[in-house]
Image (cartoon, rainbow, N blue to C red):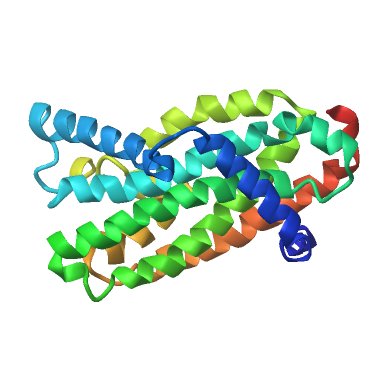
Length: 264
């Protein structure tokens, strides 16, 4: 776990890596980071059109666009971070070969760049949700610490994926392949209780707790969309999953750190 302490010890270097990645992403763009809202808002509009007006399957979900946007904010941060981190070591191969520095800062910088997008989306939700759903005005702030823990979970997974992809180049393709079915197994577009009856509770529990992204999304959504405290089991799951992801990232990185420069 000591690999994450390098974020503090080498904070100036990390800040430079983050600044470079951030500027490269929005270089020459007039709107800059505001473009990060284009993808989730466009997806929200399409999904609302399909599910609300064409298939008419969202009637049981009040304020469906906000329900959808809250889930998309977390999912897009997670999925894009993993994809960016998977390529990050390879894309920075020349820098890694020339200079000796904590290499884990490279995928963590990729996650930090996506974290800006996540923060912007959350800021929009903190304006829209309390304005349109009065019940969340007293609970919305609880989503902030939950989002921080979720970012830690994503960071740990990103380090593991980036390190593994240096040795096994199929990892980035595997990540890209599993994200689409993973998305549809995650209750971003729907709620489990819409489609599964009480007699199928075992399936619901498997889909809910077998997917490490579902409890974090449900925990963030509870105060930000439903106006209630998140379920204790979801919060505990999120915290345990974050610690497990950080430990996994540290373990995988430690196993391949000495081989990274050679493999690249």
